[in-house]
Image (cartoon, rainbow, N blue to C red; front, side, top):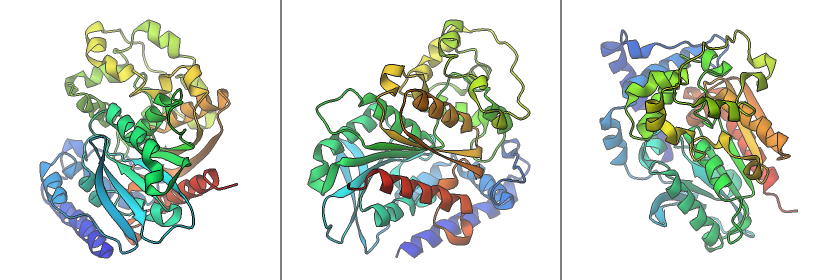
Amino acid sequence: MESFYALASIAGILVAFVLLVLIATSHNSFKVEIPPDADQPSKLRLYHYVYTLLEEHVLIRLIFDGLPVCRDSQLCIKDLHFDEVPVRIYLPRAPPAGKRRGVIFFHGGCGMFGTLNVYFYFLNSLICPYLVSKLFFIGYSILYAQTLECLMATEHFLKTSENYGVDPARIIACGDSAGGTFAATVCQELVNRTDIPKIRAQVLVYPFLQALNFNLPSHQKNAFTAFLSRERTVCYMLKYLNKDCSLKEAVLAGSHVPESMNLKYRKWINPDLIPEIFKLGYKPPLPTSFLPEVHEETKELLKTRLSPLLAEDAVVCRLPDTCIITCQHDVLRDDGLLYKKRLEDNNVKVSWYHMDDGFHCALGFFGYGIFSFPSSSKIMNYTVNFIKENTSIN
C-alpha cells in the first residue's frame, strides 16, 4: 500500500510539471540559479519549477488533506493530540526487547505546507517510517500554529514517554528547515526545566536560526537558489507572523534592526565568523538606514523563539549534544555554521555534516528511488547514525 502513495505523489508531480510547461515557463517567479555542482542539477531545476507552480495553491492542501493516512503493515500510525496540539505518532508493531529510543520530529515547510497530510504526502512520506524502522519510535509533531504549541507537545511527550514504551533518557528533538528552528527553540526553552526529563540531543537539518542579517555570504551566493531563495525566506517568515510582505525589502536590507542590536550581536552574527572557504565572492553590503516603523512591525523576528542564534550564552552552554547538517547550495547555510561555532564556543558537543552538493529541501526527497537525490540518502543516513550513537545504551 505504501508504494501506491509513493506512486501517487510522483504522478502528482509529473502532472504538475505538464501544467507548468503549458502555463508558466515565462513567469518571473520561476527565476532560479542552479549551480552545475549541485546534486543532479537538471532534476533539481525541474522540481523547483513544480514547487514554484504549486507552493501557494489551496487545491494542494484540499487534495492531500482528503487522503487517508498512508499505512504500513510494520507500523502503527496514529493521529493524536498532545495537550491539544495535533501530532502523528509512529510505533513499530513488533514488541520491543526493552524501552525504545524516541524522536520528536518537527516538520519543515516554511508555513506553506502547513498540515501533516500535505507535508506527509507531498514531501516527506518516507522519512518517518524509515526512521522508525531504524530507531523504533518517532513522534511527528505539527508546528504551524505557534512555537508555544511545539513546546507544549514536547513537554507532554517528555512527561508521558514511558506510556509509549520510550526511555525518557533517550529522546531526540529533530527538525528540518523551519522544523530545525523549532527544534532549536524548544531545546533552549527547556534547558532550565528540572521537572521533566532532559532532551538527549538535537538534530538540526539546514535550519533557519536568525532574522538579524540576510546579507551573509550564503545569502549572497544562494540568493536565487532552488526552493528557498533569499526573498522567499523573508516572505515566508513575514507570512508566518501575519505581516505584510511589502516589508520584505526593508528586512532584506537590514533596516529592521537598531544599530544597538547590530552591535550587541555582531560577536555572534558576522561574516568574519564564517570560514574563508565559504566566503568566495562575498561582498559586504552597503550601509542601510534604520527604520523604526519597520522594526516595530517585525520585532518578533528578533526574538529567540524565531532567532535562536540570538540566545544568551547562559542558555546555549546548557544545550544538549547537537547534530547540524548544512548544504552548500542553501541560503541558510551560514545560519548553521554560525550556530555550530556558538555551540562549540560554549563547550557543547557538535557533530557537523556538510553536503557540498546539497540544497535546501534535499531531505524531503528521501526514499523515492530514481526521483530522489543521492544527497537525500546521505543526510538521512548521517541523521540515523547520529541518533543511534547518541541514544545507545551503555
